[in-house]
Length: 441
Picture 1: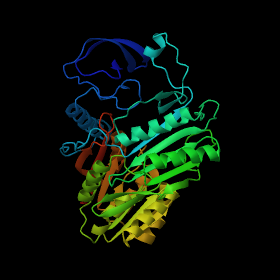
Picture 2 (picture 1 turned 90 degrees about the horizontal axis):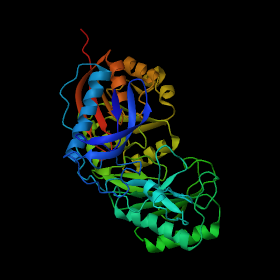
Picture 3 (picture 1 turned 30 degrees about the vertical axis):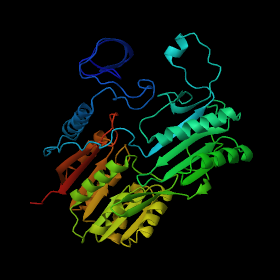
Picture 4 (picture 1 turned 45 degrees about the vertical axis):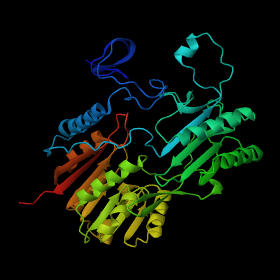
């Protein structure tokens, strides 16, 4: 039986307490490390093993990359079960720390106490904190001193808001009672140097809100977009909330090859800017564009890939479920003077159909970048019916990607595979696959 043990390293000898047992596997927790692996490295973060992220900090980066390469190969061979070429070596991240351009923090009036704190016997009367949700517990927030995934400005901002709130008697959010002023903080730091901070408040107290935002603007003049919202809902999502600008612009900008990409508070953008550029270059290269092709960009988001490849295509048509994202995509085309893109909003399986293809033309190339769940069967069927010459499938989940590739195998063969590491110290890996239409005999 396979036993999954978080925070273990290959070669460790450990005592494990089994926490969950299924028919074919079990999950355990390290109780004691008897003999640590010689492959272990010292985790940089003081919150390692408690915080929900960065679970591979104790593994050398070269081993992380090897494990992700193997993950892609296993998915292709065990799930897709199709003929594949040699998989290209994974493209590692140039920066393995401070690589994220976006972080989200939650404020809580009942910060999580660790096992060590509880066993110390000390009193902790001050429970206000700001940090990350404990995995599997929506109402438990770990107070974070330092996160190493974003530029240290993110830590400075979070700690300033926390300190300001405590010193001025602001209420921190109670996740069970759904009350409290300080709720969440989103920080985006673009590769261009522009900075967005978005405070979400759980109460509408204009005087206190203005005082905090004024203090943030004064203390951090490098913030180019300071925004806020009043979120009185039960959940933290802001997609349906009105976002108000306190100072600066309502967006920040990223840049690739001279192209500007506007990012609003609700916009999706790859969280590792430098690796996103490498990822998109891989996708563009696999597309093999010469300037004469009609390209469909499925799940286009804010049109980043569509606009990025537009210079090498005759026309690019992007489809995305989120209407706000499509509006961002159109703006991104406009600000860059791109005139050969079209964007449509709607559920992919409803928009992409035979009538749509008859109206807009049969694509020469399709670039596909779906969510983790992969593609709906109806979308696969339309792709098979449309028979574009080339498919470029970008995925953040090699397992569902492999499942879809098996479905596409009826007409397509895998021509190239390129993993890209977007998230060092985690198990997540991005993978790009080129598929060529089989020649009819």
